[in-house]
Image 1 (cartoon, rainbow, N blue to C red):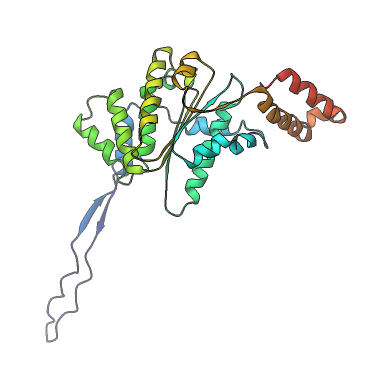
Image 2: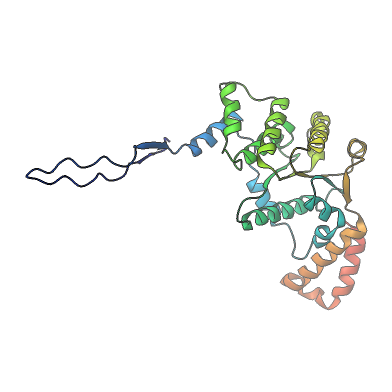
Length: 296
């Protein structure tokens, strides 16, 4: 649908002159300016050009709901997290399947957007992507880059200008390749200044994309022109252990995760009416379930 055009007119003309027939009114104080309200059109054009990479809003919303009250507090007090939130660099959160990495990611993303909304002047940008083995489009590094770039382009000082220029360069007839996407990302990072990027579940990339994601992390780790805070999460994999050996790491180990498991069980016993018969034995139930879960 075409967007409406807003006409901004010059000032009101002056009063007519004296006499039997008044003189003509004075000329208005400025020109007529036509402003086409095309931001929505531009966004739609760029989304279509990049073949509508998966929008992460729904995934973020659904993952946020999985968090139980009181869990994850230890993570945000961890010295490595505090170091990362205050200083540019890469933070790697590593843990087995089911350890709650994606829930931690969603809590972090929610917190970053909350901080951003509270600042009078937007002082940093936020972008994120959840890799997911269940759908093909969420296993590709290039598709992830397209979504990240669209997110950052919408926060750039010159809204979508950098991305739109590249669209025009290719006449919208060719998709940007991996190196084009990295180049666009770095240009946006340069414009935005301080930026937080969260990439969740690197291990759920397509197996053919693993080396590419490792390469991307290395390129972003080397970026030093503006403050970039990159958080990545994954299950333990030899390729990541080798490639991210010098990256600041938080490992989700059983003894740490047991705190969250106890908090979850305590909350459930207090709020879930179907567990009423177990309340008199709450301490025993919590101990038994925690022991059997072993941090999972």
